[in-house]
Image 1 (cartoon, rainbow, N blue to C red):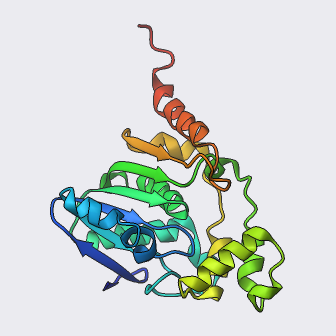
Image 2 (cartoon, rainbow, N blue to C red; image 1 turned 90 degrees about the vertical axis):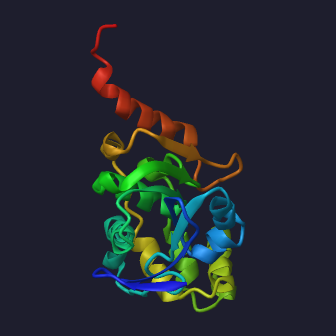
Length: 229
């Protein structure tokens, strides 16, 4: 992993391959190696002719840790991603985000559309808008004194995963609360036209990829609804 000392944060990242750049943004409590290298995504994209840039989000992996919730707003994490692209002199890249990474990617595409070519939102559905997922159980699991003290199933799952990845539990606890804001539907009006939404059929956290896609389609079609054909 390389380190970029950005104005916003110290961000660890990998940069491999040649061709059109694609930025990979991992999910909560994960990191670039766990999310993208281990499952083979990074190598597949390199072999397919892409330049792969995968960062550790702030608070994750080898990137800088913060312990204030406000540091983990979606806007701050999207700025990190944008700053990394600029640091690498990349004017435009495809962007793929998974779970929390999908929320960061959506925010990046809205705030810095000139940097984003094609957009892939994976592992996060209509919850990005609806806000039906309760992150407090994850916070409780991360903030508990030990895994044995965690009371909920989802809290146990995230605490276990965070420990397996060697994560900073206090930083993640701040992140899950600071980055829990939900995305207004209006944001989708500014997204690039070519967007793919991917949600697993058994994903109980992401859910409703179809509704998220429908919101996106309605947003980009709305200017034409009064047109006569």
